[in-house]
Length: 282
Ligand code: AMP
Image 1 (cartoon, rainbow, N blue to C red):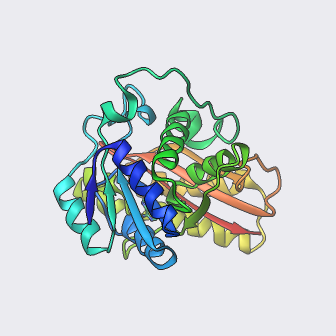
Image 2: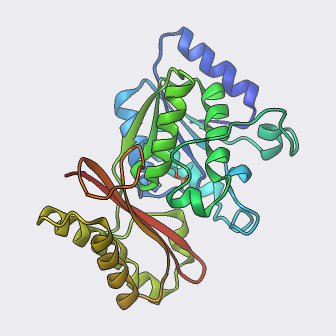
Image 3: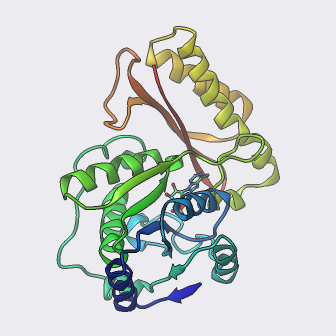
């Protein structure tokens, strides 16, 4: 496995691989790899000649009071995991390399699908995501890029970005990988206390109950939301950030639940903000 920190070196290698006719599968991450990331990598491995994984904790997508400084990092462990997963190139650029200091002369502003869910709570977050993903696409020049549905709003935003800017990359969404008890795997789960870790499976269980109620005929989004909120507040110490139901991937509000929908939630434990969602056809 090649480890590349230089942007020009990565771009040159990608150009060479393309000239040789090799297909490039790309998995962008912020590191501290877990089975969710490894599943994205496995899918990329199956469908491409070469797999490139990036590890970059992107300062642009963190708000001033968020966890950029304390985000878990362990590059040596990540290198081993990536190597064992059959990654060909690990791209690990520096912040200075990516942003040449702190200012950019142009930026991307996402206009749709961001006034809801995490976008409402994390101002500028998806502008930061869209900017870094665009830069990474231009450096890695992938044919396919793999993103997890754990971050379903991110998938929706990148979907829009690719369409709007005619980016020649195929977006491949991958289902959320979970612990045995249903908790979505996340680098931030290490922040949970043992009591919070015991409570955390309630998040997914309540999403599943919401889905079941819809399958049994309930069509009022407010009733489903109240049921989930009641579930979480009675069974955990978590503070609810949001519980919402929207159309997917448009993320438009619904008065009657129908079509392809997403139930998404974000909650705060003492040190960790966790998100989860479930999407399905009604
Ligand atoms: P992150 O390092 O958290 O930015 O995640 C990098 C990629 O891995 C994103 O596309 C995430 O959606 C995806 N990902 C993170 N956790 C999971 C999971 N539990 N299952 C599937 N994909 C995931």
